Structures are given as structure tokens and as C-alpha cells.
Length: 244
Ligand code: IPE
Ligand code: IPE
Ligand code: MG
Image (cartoon, rainbow, N blue to C red; front, top):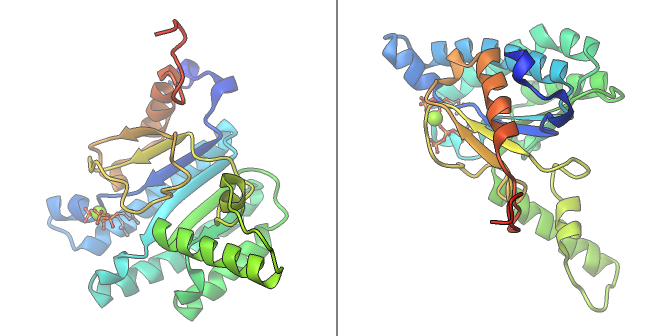
């Protein structure tokens, strides 16, 4: 499968909506958390293969700003799993020169989670390989609201006389500042929606949806998504290669 990939055309940024953990568990008559736990292995495999492919950025949607609506017990277990993941995987992430970044209103996460995340951010801050964005308490609308407020404040504080925003100014105030926009957006478990993920940044992303639930997502699926992406014709509103 690797042989089918054009290594000169690896998507620079892949974003993944890791969905279907609950359904995976239900089908096996297991509690939902068993699905989340099994999903951690899929995260491990995905990070590894993306970094091996030489991808610049991988963004994983791990917990949305709307996921607080879930039962407190599931939220607590998800937070515990996240800490477990960090403790288990950070060494290897660092060894592979990967730089961890967090997207989302991270200050609202439980303090222990924040501490572990900060350790990870510090440890990997100087790494020059793939950027691994983990979206936690992330909502794209909240991100845009935060960006607009920061822009307004900057303009008011700076006494700007004729305030004007541009696409560049907005992009610079998002949590993805400095990074290329996603070329490829993957969603597992067959759901055809974006669920408030990276609304600004995915303007021209190619979308790839699989029926496979996240815990069953393997390196093979990731490679298939990249192969399919490489066959797509990205037109950006213009005309295709053959002028039609
Ligand atoms: C994705 O799986 C993980 C999170 C949103 C945290 P779900 O928990 O949404 O699984 P389904 O959609 O209920 O199957
Ligand atoms: C999106 O999945 C969020 C994450 C994968 C973290 P959800 O399961 O929360 O999305 P909806 O509710 O089906 O839109
Ligand atoms: Mg879901």
C-alpha cells in the first residue's frame, strides 16, 4: 500500500474527527469507556504513520466544547484516559521529534490534565518534526469569537483609527496560527458533519469519511485516505486540469 503513495504529495496537514468509540463499544456489549480506551491505540498508530510519512501537521479532535454535555462519569473517564495516554506516549512522541500543541479553551480543563499537558508542551517545545495538535475543549465558533475579541482588543488598545480585518489577521489569531490549513479532513464512523471543527481552516480541505469506527482505524485506513486524496483534483474555484 505504501508503494501506491506519492511521497512528494503527502498532505501537509491532516485533521481527524475521531468518532464512533461509543458505537464500537455498544456493538460489543461493552461500556462506552471501553471504546475510548480502544481508541487510544488508534491514536498511537495514526501519530506514528503520519510522522513516518513526513506530514507537517496532524490535528486530532479529542474533546469538543460541546462534549461537556455528556454524563460527568464519561467526562471524568475521558480525562483520566487522556492523562494515561500522555504518560504512556510522551516519551515516544518526543523521541520522534514531534511537537505537541493544544487547540481549544484549555484553561477550562481540569487542573491535573492541564499540568500533564503543560509537561508535554514543555518537553516537546523545541522539536522540529511533525506538529501534533490535540483539540481539547475545542469549538470552532468559540475559537473565532476568541480571535475576534483579541483583534478588537488589539485595535482598541493600539488606538487604531480605521480598524479593518483581513483574512490574514483572522488566521493569525486562531490557535492554528503559522500552520498550513488542513488539506485532508478525515471522519470515522460514517457521520457526514463537521461538528464545529476548524470551520475557518477547512474551507478547501478534501473530506474523507469512512464507516469504520475510530477504535478500528488502522494505518491501512490512513494510507487509503492519503491515496484517495492524491487522486482528487483540487480546483479552489478555478477550472480543472483539462479546462472543464
Ligand atoms: C468519539 O466517540 C470520542 C469523543 C467524542 C470523545 P464518541 O464517544 O462520540 O462515539 P459515538 O459517536 O457515540 O459512537
Ligand atoms: C465530534 O464527535 C467530537 C470529537 C470527535 C471529539 P461528536 O460525537 O461529539 O459529534 P456529534 O455530536 O456526533 O456531532
Ligand atoms: Mg460521536
